Structure formats: C-alpha cells, structure tokens
Length: 382
Image 1 (cartoon, rainbow, N blue to C red):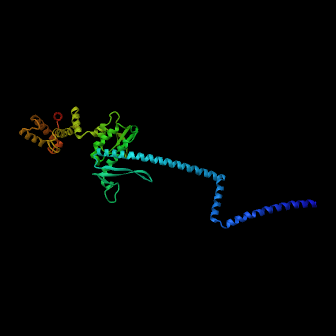
Image 2: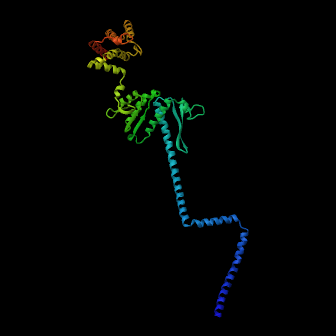
C-alpha cells in the first residue's frame, strides 16, 4: 500500500514538473506581450477589441439574419436608384418635347380666341412636390412674369375674361395631346361669361370640331345663346338637352325645349301672327295686332339696313322714301310705299306712342286677319 502511494506521488510529481516546465516556457512570450503592451495605443486596442466583438456578434444566428435583410434592402435601394435615374431621363426627354408642343398649341388657341396675349418661355421646374411648369405672359411682345413684387404680373395684367380664355386654351391643347381622345367623355362646365363674348363664335366652332372627335361631349352653361349655337351645330339624331328646373324647395333635371329659347322675338311674333291666321284665338288678338308693327320694322331693318338703321321709325322712314322718290333715287316703289302706309296706319292703333287709347282700341277679327295677312306677305317679299 505504501508502495502504491509512492508511485502515485511520483506520477503527480512528474506531471507537476512537466506543467512547471511548460509554464516557464510561456514566461518569455508573456514578457514580450507585456513589453509590447507597455508601449501600445489603448484607443487602438479598444477599437480592435470592439471590431472583434462585432465580428463575433455578426456571425451569431439572430444578427446574421438582420444583416442579410439589410444587405438585401441596400441592393434594392441601388436598383431603385437606377430606375429613378432612368425615369428622370425619360421625364426630361418627355418634357423637352411636350412643353414646346403645349406652348405652340396653347398660343394657337389663344390666337383663335382673339386673346391679346400669348405664352412664352414655357419650361419645366423640379421641386420637392414633383414636376411643374413655369412660363411668362407676352403682352404686346413684352414679357410679364407669373409673380411680381408690386410690378406687372399674371395676377394684375390679365382680366378674368383673359384667364378664362387661357384656361380654355389649355383645356383644348391638352385634349389635342390625348392619344385616346376618341374614347373619352368630355365635360365642359360654363365656358362662357359676359367677359368672353369676344370669343363666343370661336368657342362654339372649337366645340363643334371637338364633338366629332370624342365619344360624348357634355356642355354646361348659363348662356342660352351660347347653348343654342352649340345645339344648332350638333347631330340631330344624337343630341339631347336638359335643364335644371326648380322643384319646390329643391331642383330637378327636366327636358329643355331648346327651340323656344333659340328663336328671336321677331320669330315669336311671326309665329304668333301665323298661328292666329291658322286658327283664330280671341284671347291673342290684341297681342297679334301689337306684333304687326315690330314685324314690319324688323323686315325694313334687314331689307334696307343703310336707310333704316336701328332706332328708325316707320313714319319718318316713309317721309324719307317720298323725298328719295322725288329726287329720282327711290327706296321703295310707289305701290310698296302705299301698302306700307296702309299697314302702318292700322298697326299704330295698337301702340302707346301713336294711340293713347291703344289698350282699349276695338279689334275686328276679319279686319285683323286681313291686315295680318298683308303684313306677312309684305315682310316675305324679295
């Protein structure tokens, strides 16, 4: 037993001797490290340590997944930036072509609309909100900026009518650039006001031209003469007219008899007299009698515009006709003067300026029919 303990002791002593020898072998390297550490930069070592710790953390499972996601997003951002550059290049190319085209088209419509100004220097502008346009207004070939510090600008040089005209010109110009215009339904809301009378005919013409290029056109307006002009030029088979009518405390959409609003007062008088001749209505006889003189005046205004200007009365006109007849330069023949005088003598009985009792002047149906027939015949002659 003692021998066994001695053997065990020898084994442990040998192991300790071997370990001691190994530790002694490490003393020299440790001394070198100590010597190096004594002159090393602590900040550099700290940074190296942090980098090594980051590398170790990077390769942990949770961190590795996040890093992979980050790299994927970074690659996606790079791809998006490439697409953005391509889109910007395409946009720049588009604007280089479209802005001059719009400027030319808008100015062409402004010319048609008899506008006293044009657009100039239409260019694109990039801002944080996106792409926009900048332009100037040319009045008498003098450039006026959109904004001005107390000086001439878009706001104080163009009237409301001018701005309406510009808006309509831009609208038509934008339609010209629409590749699928034939499939579009176009709604035009109140394009005419009292400030736009100088372009009423052109606006009607442009809308009639547009009508044949679109699927459907809807025009809203307060101007009956304007709508009547649109109506007369529209396709009789496909056109329709509606109006907003009062309905109690609200309103409703009803059919609109355009013809009743398109005819002139002269047309109404003529129809009123003709209707009386077709089927006499005692309730209308005084209105028919009062309509005879305006019918004659309207005819003379059209037939003899130089000799019967606005405001001329038939009585003085007959006096002028007699003077011209005596001078050998007649306006009316003797028979026409005689007939016109007879018609006027009858018609004057139903007007306040020639008969104070015009409202109670007696009317005979047979007499009225005769003078009404003669009046329409006189106004229908060549």
